[in-house]
Length: 508
Image (cartoon, rainbow, N blue to C red; front, side):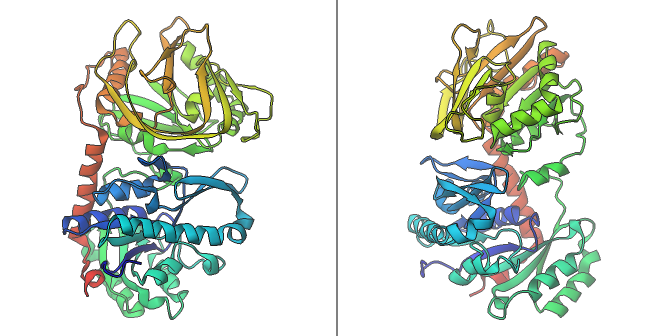
């Protein structure tokens, strides 16, 4: 622990989904505006929405977002323990950016508590060494008072006590029961833990704030903890904290001209790849579960998958595989990202039985002539390349479009010789595309996560869809989505500063 640094702050929640991740990001941006160096840190996160840092280390995307809010480059030390669920109560365990094994839920604390706590302490040391004098801004996980888990809880009150952090407890009023959430949480704290809570924050309040004045007074009287703020419901579309938040994205955009279907498969991962499309005013994303009607969208995207072969079985069992084939052959456009591209391929081999596929090759959707082999090696790397395709026919050259993003996958894919697939980018292995049938269908895929963040490439791809519909082209040179994300973080911080009094958290 760096004793020269200002006291650590921690954002806890009364439940999962209370808004901890975004409130932590807001706090980081506010502190950065005040001249501090906030250091976002979440000891343990469970998410398949990941980021790869410049050193090739994996971390949760929510900590990457908080790093951008703090004005820092994301680094895996900000999230030293990452659990990536892969079904059947099993998770891949990532320590300090690297995969170190698999854990079953019932044995996790027995087998992984000590190594996890060691990774957390190492991550803290690395982060504070890299940024001496910075202030740790910690995010908790779920509820801090799960009584069956508290003795082995790695990332909530154990960490708060270890760092003597000043804690802000966030409760989501939108879900209802906010008084019971807060009072119940405080009642389950031990006498040693209770003084760590310096303030309460009511999140996602609809209506005029003064309507909650009586509730604020009641909470402060019955708990003895000040309510530091009431954050309003924000109409901005912020990145979802986990896949459950995708269910809340059902509103119809005013002025949407294109509909793009995104498959919401059980092993969905890296859904933040779609944030740039969500931010396009003229694009409506429709998240589709297997068994729901496909309809006639302008395009279909198959996003990343943590368990490609399991999701392939779901596609087959629901009949959605045939719907996608018919859609493509009838002139539709399909695009796969990482696991989604693997699903679109012809053959999938799992010789090491890493995904339960056995030694017999499985047939994919056979819409892209690729062979994928799942092996022991995991590709973890930031990449840059020049685009050779952005949705146009091969007769229309693509020039001057740079692609930047990262690879995060275990399977290795190759183009099957003798077929008509063309490379998507100048660097080998980043992606391929080909035409389908005689009705103008196209299918493409890439291993590049973040491909849609590249503004010029994204608009080129969207303008091909618009041309098919007879719509006018959009401006072709928008900035990288990272700039839009920074503006969104600024608006989040503006709201936080307007509605939250941080003084009790920051006073000496």
